[in-house]
View 1 (tube, helix red, strand yellow):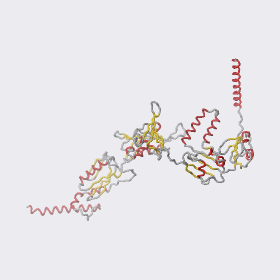
View 2 (cartoon, helix red, strand yellow; view 1 turned 90 degrees about the vertical axis):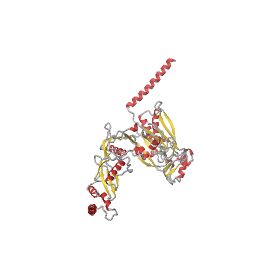
View 3 (cartoon, rainbow, N blue to C red; view 1 turned 135 degrees about the horizontal axis):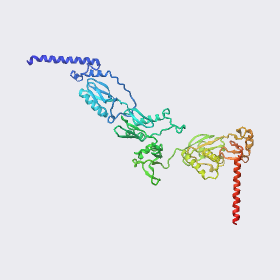
View 4 (cartoon, one colour; view 1 turned 30 degrees about the vertical axis):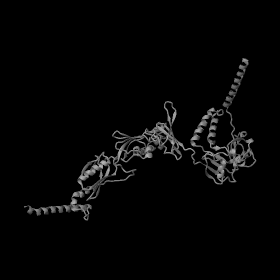
Amino acid sequence: MKTKFFPAIVMLLLFAAMNTYGQINQSSNQTSTYNPNSNQGIFNMKINADSPELMSQFNTQNVQQKTFPVDKAVNPDYYTVGPNDMFNLGIFGYMNQTIPLVVTLEGSLVIPTVGEVKVNGLTLSDAKRKVVNAVKKRYYSSDVSLTLSMPRTFLVTVYSSIQSKMDVTPLTRASEIVSRVYYDTLDVSKISYKFNNEKNEFVPQMSLRNIEIIHKNGTTDIADLYRYFSTNEDKYNPYLQEGDLIKIPFGLINKNYVTVEGAVQLGGTYEYNKDDNLESVISLGRGFDTDAEPDSITVFRSDPVTRKYKSIDLSFEKDKNFKINVFDRVFVKYKANTVMNLSVMVLGEINRPGVYPIAQKSTTLKEIIEMAGGMKPTAFLPLCILFRKYDDEYTRTDTAEVFLNRRANDLIVQTMDKDNFEVDVLSRRNRVVVDFEKLFKENDLSQNVILEHKDVVYINDDKKIVYVYGQVSNEGYVPFKEGENYEYYIKKAGGYSLAADDGDTRIVRFNSRGWYKADETKVQSGDFIYVPKVVKTKFGDKITLIATILGSLVSILTTYILIKNTN
């Protein structure tokens, strides 16, 4: 019995196998993925027998993908999967195919012949493991991979100078949101604040170190962009998540700051962060300058009780983690005896004009002229000038002190005196009084001044002109003529005008800008001759003068009578 039916059973099995092989071969040719010359056995084909059907279902999918710049590869242990994330599912074995997948709005990956796999809220690592395990149950002899091809976009809430919903990706950092808010705020078409109807545009002062990122699970991250760019640590510039609320405060630098000065690359006042230490504050100043002394750092801290500063001496290597408080002032000292890059400029009638190096507090005017090859024969010593440019901060502060010192004077009593005083201070501060004739003709070393950084030495030529201005008929330059007095030049300028006060004519020296009486001073080449206007006294001023004189006489007379009666 068994022998009778055995050949029939064998023939039936062979027929079924051949039929199955024909179907698979036909389907494989339709998808152009089967290679009849491959060395894979016929029985292995059964494992991926439904591959042509699976692949055909994805041929109709149209998934658009694009690329965008990223600063580093995605960390699968931190990336959270969500709706609209795009993936590539790879199945490799008998059939080699990459299948594009998109996470549905319900948070699933729908894989034909495998089914629905929930991935929403999983880290990328967990999602990969879950999908690979699910696919391997169906295609257990194939290699399976799942890779993220394009991150999704979602909305976050921004609360700042603008209040808006912004579209971001899981690879968007807090810094990008700050950048968007900043440029949006500066868009005058959107925001053009005017105060008291005056043309004062509102300039934002956004926080860059205390940006709150409140997640939907209730936790909060603080973004510190300064610290991120100095350390490149993600925790200071975190990636955004779905449902985040980003709060960007304003105006914190006015009441929440720390100062770093001295031998740092970009000293100044910066916004304070509660986690600041010595290392982070030095990084705010972009690190040490080349001539810094890292072992000599002083922190000046205000005592709220005594309202005085106390100093704390620190060493950078030992005290990197020293806690810095709000309003602290950090000063990095310079190295002693540092060779500094100091220079002066020599221009004009000089053989080799240009910029020359000087030693600190030692190079003299005569030495720098020799370094520049000496003066040309056309140099005219009475008109040579030395200009000095002080440090801007020093000039500003010292000028303010000079103005403040006016209160102690006994000369500035009228508004005109005050205006003249201010003009004199602001216009003449850069001029160094040097008598070049005494220095180079008489070798008077009292005129051999020590040069400072950024000084400008200008060796002038003989202009052979005199400038006449004020109350004359034709203001302008008059050719210089040796031996002539001021009246000659006034006559050449058309003579006095009707409003001239010829008795107060003055000669102004080109170099010192000093004023001298015209009838007592010899006119030199390059001088200025100024003719003032007659000032008419107003009737009210005359009455005031008479009253002042009478008051003084009455006071003297009263004093005399009192003294006489006492005697």
